[in-house]
Image 1 (cartoon, rainbow, N blue to C red):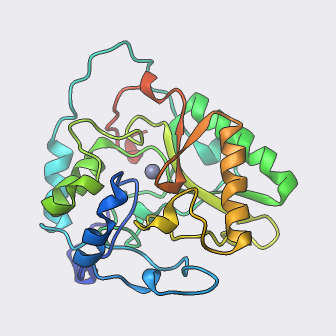
Image 2: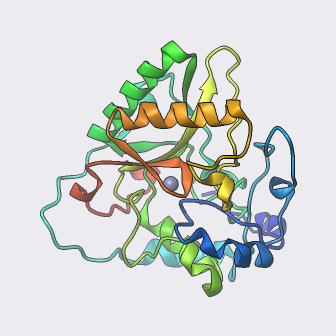
Length: 267
Ligand SMILES: [Zn+2]
């Protein structure tokens, strides 16, 4: 994994994240924004945030120290009658699905790569549904650009261990895992089939502000149209949008799969 120490130099002051690494309870947004210095993503701008901006949080410990510990840790034991894991690579099913795997780069919450490979996997029924979304979007001139899909449990643990306890309410608890850990959640946006460019949406990916809410009324009419277009196509194939993040969708069968911890390189 490319998690070199020099990456830590980029970890300055905190900025809100994201994500799906972060979750729920956006009512504490003011606290988060107070703790985290906002970069350009928070400046008022007419057309919307610059998609190149990234929210970050200063880790409590260097990620380079947390990763080996997380890799040696064991996911929570779950009881239940789960389906066997069948994680498939999205771009193998459909090569027109584009990837921008932020956690394989330093352009993410912790400012350092957490994956050693830029790949995206989902459980087969979810992956096949996503391919149907990709095909149905063609008529509207768009394709899917995936930020993150299956996320090994150890990455969820790193997020938890790296984020200050005061911000724990924003990250998934490794004791219960996240739907990304089950291979049934995906973070994504649209790209224009003609230009190849990511669509401008009302907020950044992984932005922890109300602009990220799927029903946010601000931004431009075109941004809202595209956000709603994505949601409509996803819902038609069995995905549900997360109430605080227009980019996060759960496949309806998520509870049928157990938490997984395999690294991309082992799939
Ligand atoms: Zn997510």
